Amino acid sequence: MTFLPALRGALMLSAVSMTGILLAGPALPQQAPVALEAGQAASAWEFLPDYHLPRRAAAHPLDAVVPAPGIAVEASSPQFFGLTATQRTTLTLKTALAAGAPFSVELWVLDHVNQPVGALLSPRGMTAGAPSWALGYRDGVLVFGPLDASGTPLLSAPAPEEGYKERWYAVTGVYDGATWTLYSNGVQVAAAAGPAATGTATLDLTGYLANEPYMEIANLVRGAALHDRALSADEVKAAFEARTRLVDDGRLTDAALHFTQPPYLNVPSETAIELSWETDRPAASVVEWGTTKGALQSQSFAAGERLGGMTISGLTADTPYFYRVTATDAAGLKIDSGLLSFRTAPQPGQPFTIAVSGDTEARPHINNRMSQLIWDERPNLLMLAGDLTDGGSAEKRFEWTHEYFVGMGALFGRVPVIAALGNGEDELKWYRHYHRHPGTENYFSHRYGDVEIFVLDSYLETRETAEPGFRARQKAWLDGALRASTAKWKFAIHHHDMQTSDEDDYGDSWSETSTHGDAQVQADFRGLFETYNVDLVFFGHLHTYERSWPLRGGKVDLQTGITYLQVGGMGGNLEDFAPNKPAFSRKTMRGHHYVMIRGAGDMLSVETFDIEGRLRDRFDLVKTGAGPARIVGAP
Ligand SMILES: [Fe+2]
Image (cartoon, rainbow, N blue to C red):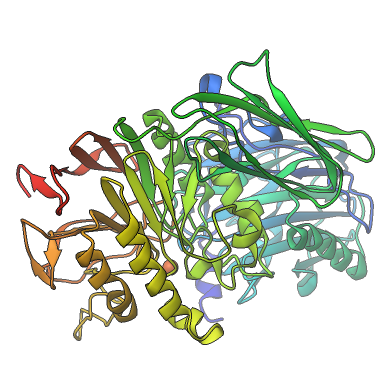
């Protein structure tokens, strides 16, 4: 790749710049020994973002793994191919590495963002002018070896076009006392003789994450190791393959019994709620629940599959409940979710608060940030408009276990979810595995107090191809369900866009005409929404916020129109809008976001917040009879 020579000189890693003062930082990654099949790891670390809800809500089951090392930020940190250091953690070796001694060093990277980010692992405690070494990843480039006078490592190679399952990169360096060798996903990509290695007792792991707000080292680097000998090529390959098996299985670590799906609440009604959980290995589980901690009833599940699930029924409307999931594996190891909580659905006529967003996709750090903001509002229900993962197909279970549940799991234990599916859920293997909702179809409706929520499958062309007749079946069901609905408010949620001024998904608006939405979604759903006066329609797919004017028959109708909300703001790569505003578009906002709906009696307010918690849009609806709702105040 031709860009490499130009980038090599940009690596400015000097001994002097490595001696900044460490500041106390947020504790977050978890450490645990890696069990490599090949070779004995002298020192190894695993990292996972330590996402909790705040204060007394914190009850994350992965606490059980291991205490986290501190993270520090140093203003004087070096540049790495033009990236600025944002975080650093110091890793202490079990045994100090002697100067000139052979060693092998590994980074295990999950890069699933579209902005340039990087990480470097290097000895700490170097003296100015002494030769040192570094192992690093920056999207597009891998580096390893002793540093020259300009701070450039001896070896560099292009990162593979596609990592393991497109997103994972094992960067391994081996020094045998004379030759430095760089491996990419278990395959040698560069080697050369060079100066002897420096000795060290500690390593610095530095993250270069300025391009991704809220990203932390543990989002990018999931493992590191230093072996006090030179691994053979076969051992490097075996170590890579051992890491990939965890990814394949959707397990975060070999080191501890843990939840790969923390307790996950779905579809709360007045009298019941769905609960599921999954452990990294078969384990016997006990679910306890009740209205007071001292009087919980329980149900036991024998060790079988990893996934557990049940309907908790016989509940009372609008009532706080507490619950706990514990699991015990065959060796007697135990894990405890902690005492969690939810509230059953309100009865009709009672106030309600619902959070809405979509496209959680591949940014646990944004998922966590938005979760914290949503939790502040204490909604008793969260609606998600699909693309829970950005490609969580059958072979990519890790997008659920290593991304979706890592970012959202803390909130999911306390705020139940109603989730539509998107194209990101692909053939639906894992969507169906992890979700519990009514019926066996991909569409359903659910009553929540004064609201009926119609969840639709908008992946129409793909579904129809796989299952001829699907569109007609779903449409007939929607017609009947809307006609039968007695709810005061009717919300629809699906993934693909009914009406959008996105720049290029429906024609490149910078150079040609856009159709402004999915023609099949418009054909199947819009007429029914208008016939039955659906009040609000939510969809995602595009990662910007947009509110339409009230629309009927394709035209603005302030008296009887339907408001469409594009809410794909929970974590996907941000997108952009057409260069000019179509007539249907009322409000646009480029940024991660969520929506809060608050209803009481005849009134409904809709507020949209950005990632800093700032109010970016608001409107109110009033409905006094059986007809359509109207926006009150300024439309
Ligand atoms: Fe999508």
